[in-house]
Amino acid sequence: MGELNVEKLIGNPNKSIYIKQLMSDIKALEYMLENNMFEKDITRIGAEQEFCLVNKEWGPANNAVEILKELDQKYFTSEIALYNLEINLDPHELKGDCFSTLHRQLKKLLNTAEEAAAKKETKIMLTGILPTIRTKHLSLSYMTPLKRYKILNEAIKEVRKNDIELHIKGVDELNLKHDSILYEGCNTSFQSHLQINPDEFADTYNWAQAIAGPILSICTNSPMLMGRELWEESRIALFAQSVDTRASTFVLNEREPRVGFGNRWAQGSVADFFKDTVIGFRSLITTDFETDSMTEIQEGKTPKLKALKLHNGTVYKWNRLCYGTTDGKAHMRIENRYIPSGPSTADEIANMMFWVGVMKGRPKEFDDIHTKMEFKDAKSNFFNAARYGMATQFYWNGKLVSSQDLLMDHFLPMAYRGLYSMKVSPADAEQYLRIIKNRIRSRNGSRWIVEGFRKLKKEYKTPDALKILSATMYERQDKGYNVDIWQLPRGDEFKVPKDNRKVGERMNIRTITAQENDSMELVLRMMQWKNIHHVPILDIHLDLVGLLTWTDVGKYLDRPEEHEQSINQIMQKNLITVTPETPLDEATRLMEENEINCLPVVRDKKLVGIITSKDL
Image (cartoon, rainbow, N blue to C red; front, side, top):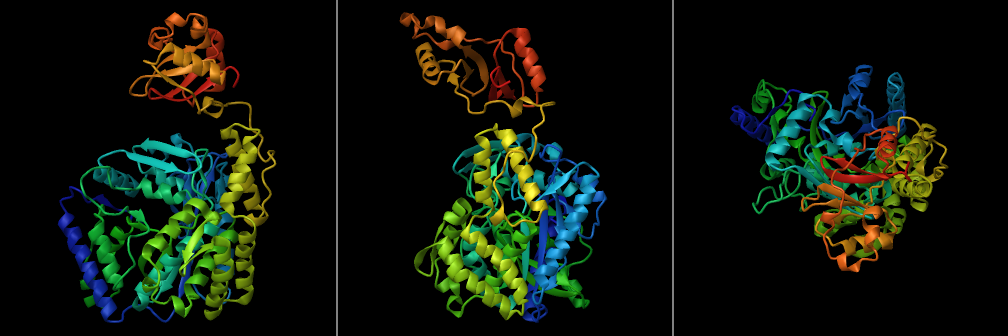
């Protein structure tokens, strides 16, 4: 999605022009492969750093556009959400101190971003999912006002024909329905690029798929969303659902999600791989074309394959194959998209080095991995790693192996061999792979977040705990500590302000409710058993229609002959409600003026919580 000037393809009168350009790109790609027009005698690495922008209370900021104006457009670019930006790092040849050089540039650019953000009273954070994101941050008002994001959102909604439904079940469960693709903005990653020889494409790509699960397990850093503990790397489920164009229907449409791992080992050439993506996924967007790729080749130019890159930019494989040019020479690379941002820059470079090392250190016994390992085992390993992180058991080389044993005894030696074979500096290799080794022996980012949150929850409400957690993460990152030595939050990293608080920060979201046709006896007993004094009442559409208090039902305690009547007859129907954005001062005033002790919290008639005088 690097192309700025895009249009929706569905219903576009110039669709035939786009299709012609796409076919020309495929033909040009085949010609280039057959005529040895790809760079093969060099291996480069590169990376993209996505990061979050947070305000004074550690919530998502909405000023990415203003901050971007202060930054060098050569390296910085926008993301779909107004609380994210991205850094594109310079590529480096895989040798010598390339990783520490990349690390120095990353820190320098992040410092530049920090300085620009500070002018807007904003800070930057590295994390897979910002803990303080709430439902309101997924509204279109938080989408970056660029045409390409608006068009992509409209195109995906048009293909789906339904709102986007999010369902992730982990330790907790999250069910949400939304009308935009802004869930994608919750995800921030550290995308690593490795240049490959296109002649060895299938074997190299399949190896990347085979090792994805074990590599991910040590890198997980996104266990939470909206205060729920989900997967160890919740981004994998969240991103997949955020841009899924497959509506829930009996009609057979696309056979796999746009964000996915794939369904089979790669076969054939690079061109065959891209043909499969064209067959498997509907093109969503188009742009203007000055000439076609075959004409560019005939003129002695290296084609940009503009249409193919545009299509590929809306198919989000976790290992994505990318075409590019460097100094007028075409190359192919694998983009690793599953590794999250953070917890520190050193952790990120270590993750990247570990992946690159294992990619280059493949033992001969694992050549032609597609003949030695079931694809479904590789896919199972990946999703199990996303769910369970370092607690995963992997199917590897015909055996069931723990993540610690597989990484320490097999993958780390592989990584060292691969890096040394590329003449990477031993000092660099030891510095960054030691970080991986220490993490294997202690804990990774996701476990630190979970343990830190659980500790804070013993003393603070969820919204406050998430703010303190975020403040702690920023403090540790700012000091440059690796996550394996991070101490858990003390609780004083952020002093929760007492002024300007909102109902959403104090309300109870786990609320016992009843249906309007329930009997009085049932509701009476529920209130007795749970020692509660307020029960919101919902109708068949789950809209809030009433409220029952102990004052309403307590008088019936000794009148069993009336217990069978419906609560609809005695519940309060003229309700005073608030929203999560209502100031606490106003909620207090409403309770005092109306001599009540409870306010249902609603959004569009739907109950999202309850706040009582006790909470205030």
